[in-house]
Image (cartoon, rainbow, N blue to C red; front, side, top):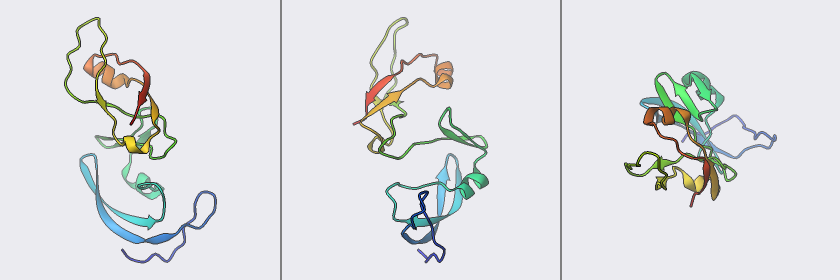
Length: 142
């Protein structure tokens, strides 16, 4: 890490404790990017700054909670204790008979960063692609 001479402030105006800066190669989707990170004493794993978003991201799809960068679509994960929306991934291939219902075991990426109970709702694109109709519901993340 190298020292940082400029000061940084939180959204509330308080000065942040900055430890330094470092250049790293970050992979998002299929691409790698050389990114200059400012290392601060914060509770989150990281924050993507406006400079990075303007330079790399074509647009942010808030409805589908993803970054669109060329042909890459990178899911967004809200990293805070109050997050109550989560993504789930089906653990294994499951065959569900037509006109039936079934509980399906899922993995919850980054579950340690989200609230103990979260709301899950179907993604219309996945529904069309996979020809399934998952139900909305509340899941216990831990």
